[in-house]
Amino acid sequence: MTPEVHIALVHHPVLNKTGEIVATAVTNLDIHDNARSARTYGLASYHIVTPLDAQVELVSRILGHWRNGFGARRVPNRVDAMNLVRVSRTLEDVIGEIERDAGKRPFVVATAARRLPGALRYAELRERIGREPGPYLIVFGTGYGLAGSVIEAADALLEPIGDPGDWNHLSVRAATAITLDRLLGL
Amino acid sequence: MTPEVHIALVHHPVLNKTGEIVATAVTNLDIHDNARSARTYGLASYHIVTPLDAQVELVSRILGHWRNGFGARRVPNRVDAMNLVRVSRTLEDVIGEIERDAGKRPFVVATAARRLPGALRYAELRERIGREPGPYLIVFGTGYGLAGSVIEAADALLEPIGDPGDWNHLSVRAATAITLDRLLGL
Image (tube, rainbow over the protein chains, first blue to last red):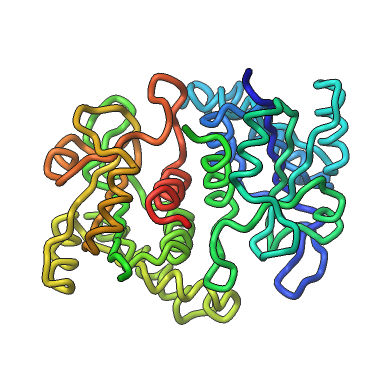
């Protein structure tokens, strides 16, 4: 019984350096790296969340290049990874899409680099994923992390990867890879 | 007793898609992402290996920007990560530099995405790092992986991250992060 796990990378609402809520720009390597990590760990989908028309258009063009265009001919294995990528305007749209396909609302897990009360431990979530097939949606923030509203609306918050008292500024690409390995790695 | 662990990201000699030995170009995000992962996991240094003058110059300019220039003022925490980065022309130079500083040649561990005989398991290397303080040098390849000569010259080869019989095309940024978490994570 393979668990159904999805990830989302949120570009709005996220925090900037001073704690304001902003929309960040999509980074090309966020699409590629997380798609490759998603494919490696057998995820069901990888959602890029941005409300900005120009960014939705940009992601769609990049996906076309790597699924059907010159990129697909040059790096054929990348097609398998890029086929997992979706672009959505809000996290609620992502949740709705997964619910529509799975017939069940996903268990939504937010992530944060700071320690917050009541966070789920990696071992707990890994054990749950092994026991209940899901669907699960694990949500990562760009910029300086997910807005408080996203964390509050989630079903659970995952503990931080490192020691938040120490230096704790992993790239979101590295944090996503480590999180998937801890939850789903061999 | 904190172990002394270094990483190197090799741009030559590595393989291209058809198995030829090439020099790849340095990617800006490889510098940043791996420096941030290196700092998070308490590494002693992160070496970019490239024999190309123009690439050595490029890396030096990028490091200057993030250590002393506008980047350092805009993202002060990045300085701590970028201070770990070195640029070297060959892997032997890296080994020599570590040996000079530590008074002892590092235990050199190559990595590969394909399964090869005699590979060290993650748990074995983690246990060794906990027992013997090092120095250790873990070597990652860009392109389609380290040339056979690098793997043969290393003291050990680490097992692949995923199932090489299945889809196994992580980005080197993700592979580095996962490797450090498996070897040094809490």
